[in-house]
Image (cartoon, rainbow, N blue to C red):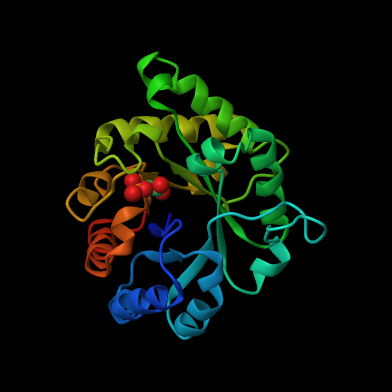
Length: 254
Ligand code: PGA
Protein backbone atom coordinates (compact mmCIF):
# COMPACT_ATOMS: atom_id res chain seq x y z
CA UNK A 1 0.00 0.00 0.00
CA UNK A 2 2.82 2.46 0.82
CA UNK A 3 5.32 2.91 -1.98
CA UNK A 4 8.89 2.91 -0.62
CA UNK A 5 10.70 6.22 -1.01
CA UNK A 6 14.37 7.13 -0.90
CA UNK A 7 15.24 10.82 -0.92
CA UNK A 8 18.77 12.18 -1.23
CA UNK A 9 19.37 15.41 0.66
CA UNK A 10 22.46 16.97 -0.87
CA UNK A 11 22.42 19.83 1.65
CA UNK A 12 24.83 22.70 0.83
CA UNK A 13 27.00 20.59 -1.47
CA UNK A 14 27.65 20.56 -5.24
CA UNK A 15 28.33 23.45 -7.57
CA UNK A 16 26.29 23.42 -10.79
CA UNK A 17 28.71 21.28 -12.69
CA UNK A 18 29.16 18.85 -9.80
CA UNK A 19 25.42 18.48 -9.47
CA UNK A 20 25.12 17.74 -13.15
CA UNK A 21 27.94 15.19 -13.00
CA UNK A 22 26.46 13.49 -9.95
CA UNK A 23 23.08 13.10 -11.62
CA UNK A 24 24.61 11.84 -14.83
CA UNK A 25 26.58 9.25 -12.85
CA UNK A 26 23.45 7.66 -11.40
CA UNK A 27 20.51 8.59 -13.60
CA UNK A 28 20.31 5.56 -15.88
CA UNK A 29 20.61 3.10 -12.99
CA UNK A 30 18.14 4.97 -10.80
CA UNK A 31 15.67 5.24 -13.64
CA UNK A 32 15.79 1.48 -14.23
CA UNK A 33 14.84 0.65 -10.62
CA UNK A 34 11.14 0.06 -10.09
CA UNK A 35 9.61 -0.59 -6.72
CA UNK A 36 10.81 2.58 -4.99
CA UNK A 37 10.21 6.25 -5.53
CA UNK A 38 13.50 8.12 -6.04
CA UNK A 39 13.84 11.78 -5.10
CA UNK A 40 16.91 14.01 -5.41
CA UNK A 41 17.04 17.21 -3.36
CA UNK A 42 19.91 19.35 -4.69
CA UNK A 43 20.60 23.00 -3.80
CA UNK A 44 18.00 25.40 -5.28
CA UNK A 45 20.40 26.65 -7.97
CA UNK A 46 20.63 23.17 -9.51
CA UNK A 47 16.92 22.37 -9.61
CA UNK A 48 16.38 23.77 -13.11
CA UNK A 49 19.22 21.86 -14.70
CA UNK A 50 18.27 18.68 -12.87
CA UNK A 51 14.70 19.09 -14.05
CA UNK A 52 15.95 19.17 -17.61
CA UNK A 53 18.17 16.12 -17.09
CA UNK A 54 15.52 14.03 -15.32
CA UNK A 55 12.42 15.04 -17.28
CA UNK A 56 12.05 11.83 -19.27
CA UNK A 57 12.93 9.58 -16.32
CA UNK A 58 11.23 8.22 -13.19
CA UNK A 59 13.55 10.24 -10.94
CA UNK A 60 11.80 13.03 -9.03
CA UNK A 61 13.11 16.21 -7.48
CA UNK A 62 12.68 17.99 -4.19
CA UNK A 63 13.81 21.28 -2.66
CA UNK A 64 15.47 21.48 0.75
CA UNK A 65 13.39 24.35 2.12
CA UNK A 66 10.94 27.08 1.06
CA UNK A 67 9.27 30.22 2.38
CA UNK A 68 5.58 30.15 3.33
CA UNK A 69 4.58 33.14 1.15
CA UNK A 70 4.24 33.10 -2.62
CA UNK A 71 6.00 36.41 -3.18
CA UNK A 72 7.13 39.57 -1.48
CA UNK A 73 9.96 41.41 0.21
CA UNK A 74 11.79 38.41 1.64
CA UNK A 75 15.35 38.86 0.45
CA UNK A 76 17.11 35.59 -0.19
CA UNK A 77 14.03 33.36 0.08
CA UNK A 78 12.48 30.95 -2.44
CA UNK A 79 8.71 30.64 -2.70
CA UNK A 80 6.40 27.69 -3.29
CA UNK A 81 5.23 29.33 -6.54
CA UNK A 82 8.79 29.16 -7.84
CA UNK A 83 9.20 25.54 -6.78
CA UNK A 84 6.05 24.06 -8.27
CA UNK A 85 7.58 24.55 -11.72
CA UNK A 86 10.69 22.68 -10.72
CA UNK A 87 9.98 19.87 -8.26
CA UNK A 88 7.38 17.65 -6.59
CA UNK A 89 8.72 17.46 -3.04
CA UNK A 90 10.09 19.86 -0.44
CA UNK A 91 12.00 18.99 2.73
CA UNK A 92 10.63 21.04 5.63
CA UNK A 93 11.78 21.46 9.21
CA UNK A 94 15.09 19.68 8.79
CA UNK A 95 16.94 19.71 12.12
CA UNK A 96 19.65 21.90 10.58
CA UNK A 97 16.95 24.49 9.73
CA UNK A 98 15.58 24.24 13.26
CA UNK A 99 19.03 24.45 14.84
CA UNK A 100 20.92 26.99 12.71
CA UNK A 101 18.10 29.06 11.22
CA UNK A 102 15.80 29.23 14.23
CA UNK A 103 12.84 27.56 12.54
CA UNK A 104 10.14 26.93 15.07
CA UNK A 105 7.31 24.42 14.98
CA UNK A 106 4.98 27.33 14.11
CA UNK A 107 7.05 28.41 11.09
CA UNK A 108 7.37 24.82 9.94
CA UNK A 109 3.61 24.34 10.29
CA UNK A 110 3.01 27.38 8.05
CA UNK A 111 5.35 25.90 5.48
CA UNK A 112 3.67 22.48 5.60
CA UNK A 113 0.23 24.02 5.03
CA UNK A 114 1.53 26.20 2.23
CA UNK A 115 3.38 23.36 0.50
CA UNK A 116 0.30 21.13 0.51
CA UNK A 117 -1.89 23.99 -0.68
CA UNK A 118 0.55 24.60 -3.53
CA UNK A 119 0.62 20.97 -4.66
CA UNK A 120 4.08 20.20 -3.26
CA UNK A 121 4.63 17.09 -1.14
CA UNK A 122 6.28 18.06 2.15
CA UNK A 123 8.89 15.78 3.69
CA UNK A 124 8.41 16.94 7.26
CA UNK A 125 11.47 16.20 9.39
CA UNK A 126 11.20 15.52 13.07
CA UNK A 127 13.57 14.07 15.64
CA UNK A 128 14.94 14.47 19.12
CA UNK A 129 18.37 15.84 20.08
CA UNK A 130 20.97 13.83 21.97
CA UNK A 131 20.10 15.76 25.10
CA UNK A 132 16.37 15.02 24.72
CA UNK A 133 17.20 11.40 24.12
CA UNK A 134 19.47 11.07 27.13
CA UNK A 135 17.04 12.81 29.44
CA UNK A 136 14.24 10.48 28.39
CA UNK A 137 12.29 13.25 26.62
CA UNK A 138 12.43 11.86 23.09
CA UNK A 139 8.78 10.75 22.93
CA UNK A 140 7.53 14.04 24.31
CA UNK A 141 9.58 16.08 21.82
CA UNK A 142 8.50 13.95 18.90
CA UNK A 143 4.83 14.17 19.87
CA UNK A 144 5.14 17.96 20.10
CA UNK A 145 6.84 18.23 16.72
CA UNK A 146 4.23 16.04 15.00
CA UNK A 147 1.22 17.78 16.55
CA UNK A 148 2.58 21.31 16.05
CA UNK A 149 3.88 20.57 12.56
CA UNK A 150 0.49 19.22 11.50
CA UNK A 151 -1.75 21.70 13.33
CA UNK A 152 -4.74 22.61 11.11
CA UNK A 153 -3.50 20.33 8.35
CA UNK A 154 -6.26 18.18 6.82
CA UNK A 155 -5.53 14.45 6.67
CA UNK A 156 -3.58 13.64 3.52
CA UNK A 157 -1.34 10.88 2.26
CA UNK A 158 0.57 13.47 0.22
CA UNK A 159 2.58 14.19 3.33
CA UNK A 160 5.82 12.31 4.01
CA UNK A 161 7.46 12.30 7.43
CA UNK A 162 11.16 11.73 8.04
CA UNK A 163 12.15 10.62 11.52
CA UNK A 164 15.71 11.83 11.95
CA UNK A 165 17.17 11.64 15.44
CA UNK A 166 19.56 14.60 15.57
CA UNK A 167 22.26 12.49 17.24
CA UNK A 168 22.30 10.20 14.20
CA UNK A 169 22.65 12.86 11.50
CA UNK A 170 26.10 13.02 9.95
CA UNK A 171 27.63 11.21 12.91
CA UNK A 172 28.02 7.70 11.52
CA UNK A 173 25.99 6.63 14.55
CA UNK A 174 22.70 5.49 13.04
CA UNK A 175 19.78 4.34 15.17
CA UNK A 176 19.12 0.62 15.04
CA UNK A 177 16.33 -0.62 12.82
CA UNK A 178 14.37 -1.66 15.91
CA UNK A 179 14.76 1.75 17.61
CA UNK A 180 13.67 3.57 14.47
CA UNK A 181 10.74 1.22 13.95
CA UNK A 182 9.51 1.77 17.51
CA UNK A 183 9.62 5.55 17.15
CA UNK A 184 8.02 5.49 13.73
CA UNK A 185 5.26 3.31 15.13
CA UNK A 186 4.74 5.96 17.81
CA UNK A 187 4.60 8.71 15.16
CA UNK A 188 1.97 6.74 13.25
CA UNK A 189 -0.16 6.36 16.36
CA UNK A 190 0.10 10.09 17.13
CA UNK A 191 -1.06 10.75 13.57
CA UNK A 192 -3.90 8.27 13.91
CA UNK A 193 -5.14 10.19 16.96
CA UNK A 194 -4.67 13.54 15.28
CA UNK A 195 -6.16 12.50 11.92
CA UNK A 196 -7.51 9.00 11.51
CA UNK A 197 -6.13 5.47 11.36
CA UNK A 198 -6.59 5.06 7.64
CA UNK A 199 -4.61 8.17 6.66
CA UNK A 200 -1.96 7.49 9.30
CA UNK A 201 -1.47 4.07 7.71
CA UNK A 202 -1.15 5.58 4.24
CA UNK A 203 1.46 8.23 5.10
CA UNK A 204 5.02 7.27 4.31
CA UNK A 205 7.44 7.60 7.20
CA UNK A 206 11.16 7.50 6.47
CA UNK A 207 14.17 7.03 8.70
CA UNK A 208 17.13 9.41 8.34
CA UNK A 209 20.52 9.67 10.04
CA UNK A 210 23.75 8.05 8.83
CA UNK A 211 22.00 5.74 6.36
CA UNK A 212 24.47 3.98 4.03
CA UNK A 213 24.43 1.04 1.62
CA UNK A 214 25.70 -1.08 4.53
CA UNK A 215 22.83 -0.42 6.94
CA UNK A 216 19.82 0.38 4.71
CA UNK A 217 18.67 -3.26 4.75
CA UNK A 218 18.30 -3.15 8.54
CA UNK A 219 15.83 -0.25 8.27
CA UNK A 220 13.96 -1.50 5.26
CA UNK A 221 13.37 -4.86 6.98
CA UNK A 222 11.21 -3.09 9.58
CA UNK A 223 7.49 -2.99 8.88
CA UNK A 224 6.84 0.66 9.78
CA UNK A 225 9.82 2.14 7.90
CA UNK A 226 8.95 3.11 4.33
CA UNK A 227 12.34 4.33 3.14
CA UNK A 228 15.07 6.78 4.01
CA UNK A 229 16.19 10.38 3.84
CA UNK A 230 19.86 10.09 2.99
CA UNK A 231 22.42 12.87 3.46
CA UNK A 232 26.13 12.11 3.06
CA UNK A 233 25.67 8.82 1.22
CA UNK A 234 23.47 10.50 -1.41
CA UNK A 235 26.52 12.40 -2.68
CA UNK A 236 28.13 9.19 -3.92
CA UNK A 237 26.43 7.80 -7.00
CA UNK A 238 27.19 4.12 -6.33
CA UNK A 239 26.14 4.39 -2.68
CA UNK A 240 22.85 6.06 -3.50
CA UNK A 241 22.05 3.61 -6.30
CA UNK A 242 22.78 0.71 -3.96
CA UNK A 243 20.50 2.17 -1.24
CA UNK A 244 17.67 2.58 -3.73
CA UNK A 245 18.09 -0.82 -5.30
CA UNK A 246 18.25 -2.65 -1.97
CA UNK A 247 15.12 -0.82 -0.90
CA UNK A 248 13.26 -1.73 -4.06
CA UNK A 249 14.19 -5.39 -3.85
CA UNK A 250 13.68 -5.86 -0.10
CA UNK A 251 10.47 -3.94 0.31
CA UNK A 252 7.48 -5.44 -1.37
CA UNK A 253 4.50 -3.07 -1.53
CA UNK A 254 2.04 -3.48 1.33
P1 PGA B 1 23.16 11.91 6.95
O1 PGA B 1 22.07 13.08 6.90
O2 PGA B 1 22.63 10.78 6.10
O3 PGA B 1 24.41 12.52 6.39
O4 PGA B 1 23.30 11.50 8.38
C1 PGA B 1 20.70 12.80 6.88
C2 PGA B 1 19.90 14.06 6.83
O5 PGA B 1 20.30 15.07 7.45
O6 PGA B 1 18.85 14.13 6.16
